Amino acid sequence: MGKVHLLDCTLRDGGYVNDWKFGEETIKGFSQKIAQTGIEMYEVGFLKGDSFDKDRAVFPDLESLATVISPKNPNMMYVGMIDMSAPLPVERIKKYDGSSVDMIRVIFKKNKMKQAYEYCKSIQELGYKLSVNFVGTDMYSDTEFVEGIELFNTINPYAMAIVDTFGLIKRKQFLRLVYLADNNMNKGITLCYHAHNNLQQAMGNAEALVEMNLKRDLCIDACVFGMGRGAGNLNLELFAEYMNENYDTHYRIKPMLEIMDEYLNEIYQKRFWGYSLPLYLSASNGCHPNYAIYLAEKDSLPVKAFNELLNSMPAEAKAEFSKEKAEKYYREFQENYINDKETLNKLSQEMSNKEVLILAPGSSLKQYQECIKNVIADKNPIVLAVNFVAEQYDVDYVFSSNMRRYAKIQGRTKAKCITTSNMKECKHTDYIVNFSSFASKEPDIIDNSGLMALKLLIAIGVKKVYIAGMDGYNSSLEMNYFEDTLEYDFSNVAEIRNDLISREMREFRKVLDMTFLTPSAYDL
Image (cartoon, rainbow, N blue to C red):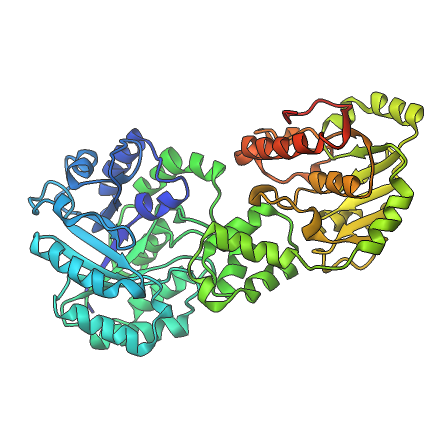
């Protein structure tokens, strides 16, 4: 059996969680602590970009990286990563002199293999150890993977890596990839495994790889606390403990626990990573995990619809995430078009000549309850609640464009219900209006129910509305909603959402007389 090395990539791969903004003190402190663990390799961060920020684990050159690892531990190999989607200019990489990283890992997608090959030759000529990482290894056919291995065999790198980019490689498929690699790589090249944990396969696959007792050396990537985007990565502390118990290694777990406590726990509290339903769905549908993260933040799709949306995406689009594509598929899914002309005519007959009071689910409904009820008694408006019902108010209509919210409303009100056509699972409603007719053109607020309700009222001829509970978004989650069951976390984008909604409401005000009965963060 060859040697098994552990490589920590917390600051590099874990950095996707917080945009690599660990802070100078944490980066330097982490580097010193990780050296105490006895692991063999430490990936300090990405080598990319043009400017150096001492608080980020991203480095535009090797000189800036050297400043955070000095003094180096002679028993540990220091590593940097270069991504071929935006490679660091070779001329910015000085010849190896031992002051900075010892090895450079080059990651590339299948369509960048030839460019990566030429780039990797330059890295070796500069004197660095080289690791060749096949991004999305499971997306290669067997022939493509073997041809890639044979291509890089010609330069005999230090290591080659199987990379489970989407966290969906299960053991049977993983072992097949390992056999292909082991039987086609040159002798003496280290085989590496980089896991993501969307389907919770990382630990089992890593154990299976070690237990194969291959003759060549192995390198297992892991992160302290499993830190990583979405469902995270293999936990360094857990795998190190497994090695200690089964292979007579002597990794020190205590410094890893101190890293968790001193440097990572605060980040974890603010930017959770770990197993989740959306990330399971993205992996099971073969999608880039960023689709799950992006769509989950909208918090508008029940699990069945979430799964259907991901499943319906074209295969060629699933591997490459972009916000524009995610929004396109989300909008197309939501725009389950119906002809609602007859419905709008009926609503117009019922509402157009009357004043309307909109009750949105903001927390101000509690504080201003007496004022709101006085307006109801004095003006006798039609009362329309948006995405909720409350026992304190007699409601004539409920408007909803969000199936998750509407599921909590059904059976709790005798009011007439107006829903939008995107809500495919809605079985009981009085009126259905076309989603795309009332959706915002701004991706971040495409399905904001308050805006959609206002656009609907304009469309059916309402001229005067009173508004209560449309408080806007606050960075403090508990201040946003009338009921705890309505809380969805938009705290990290509160200002952006407030600004976008304010712009649309200013346009509404040109054709609709709006009176706010409660305070609002919207700038009208």
